[in-house]
Length: 166
Image 1 (cartoon, helix red, strand yellow):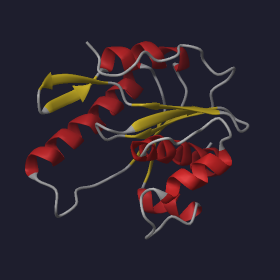
Image 2 (cartoon, helix red, strand yellow):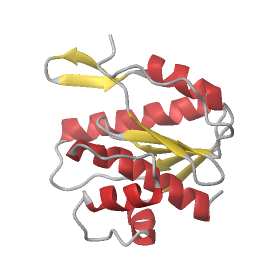
Image 3 (cartoon, one colour):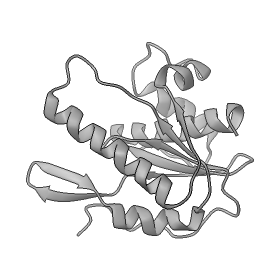
Image 4 (tube, one colour):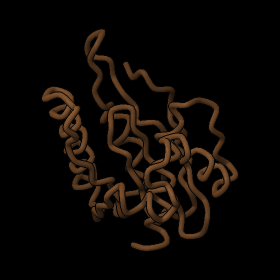
């Protein structure tokens, strides 16, 4: 059973893209060509007490409404302080997003964090600075918890793509 609340299956009238912050605690945002966007936490399943995995069935059932819509995936790389197991799991998450894009015939774009963060003046800023910018740009986005920063990141990746890629 998924650890994530059910997703609204109400598609936007027209989706311009799907932006992804690919971590296990990541998020994705579905955005239109104008200024609308919906952000979701990545649905997860608990495998063991200390191990979670992406809930691919839930993701697929939600994203199938957007077949053929471009996906913008944050292109991240290993950091020195991260362990081998965590990097393996992170790489697995990225691969699962890539497979979802392939299965749903979504053109795949990649954007490095330094590129989209520069667009919003977030380089060398605390991670939660994205919350403020996302709430300013997206009236329907409310950040109630610190973990909402992943949804904020997905929204900003999408906004970057809307302005520069699509």
